[in-house]
Image (spheres, rainbow, N blue to C red):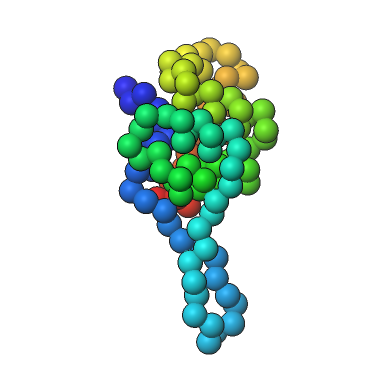
Length: 114
């Protein structure tokens, strides 16, 4: 099993988003970026893919899609990847609901960040 599911799937790079609605305007890519607990945990990890842009992008997606509580919980997975596995295999309905949100977040981060 991969130590951390999110970064394993996001190592390809940063996708562009945004632009102008004016048809003659040249669209300059605008990268999603934010700092917060996932950004900090990501940057502190020993993963090769944990660059500033990728970590900032996955934090930005978290800010748009998750509660602060879920964001902090996911940040904890960087320090304790076994916790992610324990949550995934848990029989608790709360953990099941969290895992569904986590899976949706990972999908959104992959689409947005690479």
